[in-house]
Length: 506
Image 1 (tube, one colour):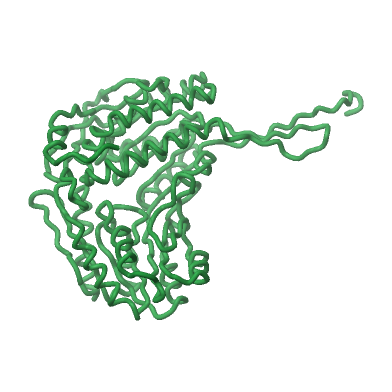
Image 2 (spheres, helix red, strand yellow; image 1 turned 135 degrees about the horizontal axis):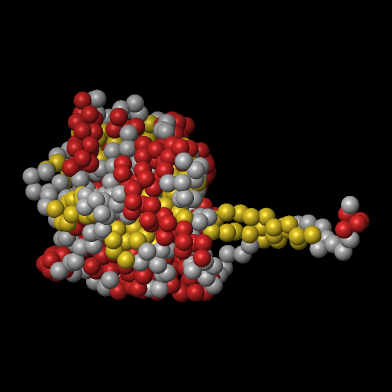
């Protein structure tokens, strides 16, 4: 990725963008006959970027039909693994070639800082596509132990037509997390992007066609979740839905599956993730840097954000001081300004939700130590916010705020830290800071979360599975070879190779 541009340069790119506004089905853009639309709004200005066509029941049916036809005739599902790999590699090259325009488009729709999209999101999306492309011809099936007169094979087959329902917080990256393993496995895919951030998925679908992906294999249906997402979840000819988003909506997809064809559902949902800092942690300034990044990155609109800081009492004041110093480095403002680490909150609804939690925290008795102010006059912005004197029963310690809000809870012992960390309906991610190896292992094992990092904040890499325990996840994992498993069916093929005659068998 080349060096970042100036704000004026990004604004010039934005002024020249051609916005995709209709569904992408069977290799071409197609508007719904109803003519119904929804607005894509720039949260940094409040201005409507474009009106997008709502994918209605007829379009959902059409997309599923074309995806099924593509899967059944084998134009992708039965393509040689080397050829599938070549297409995904070419798609990654086209995304890299168009990275700057994609980054600006995502920033306009989501309010995400352009620097994060250019240096993190798009490079990681490209890496994801390449990683799964390279795995296509390297995942072997198995021959199970059996007698000499039997060959027992265990093979993976693509599951069929896969629906991928995306969140608005990482539009391009989450698209890659879904479609890379799904396409690598040989499935046909229908993407339902978030209503707030649909246009980058539509643009990437166009690039996929240019890369050589056969028509009907990747389709994108923009529209509200209660319309398009529901139709996709209930469709009887969709074999699977992979969903990333809130736990509340994830539960709806389980109902959709039960009410239709019992399609497979994979959920990556919410989190109220703990960061545990023990009194033997080294270099509190470095710890504070990780703490701030864990909760403020992407304006806190991140399911793996460590929004609960659980710290031993003896070092709480020193760590709080270090956090305050680090937060001075987090500039809030125009997302197209590459010097801003915090951009705009994605929507008015999300802005009001976050501000509501800030008010609730004050009413419940927490101390507002830093920030707490939001502005919606010229864009939707909330400054970094830190609460102290938080108890585990408060709403700001229990609910997923999805904003730049940190709740600090003090504890006296490791046992208390573990109890507080696990006192949640979620279990997506956690971080632990300690210089004691035994304590590190003990906490990492004891905290019920899908990913636990020690002396750092992160989500692992493309080779490690990502997903959660409890109400943070269900049915599978993103990333790693485990991601391929959720997009395939396992089949046992049992072959009798004995030389016994039919008479002998009878």
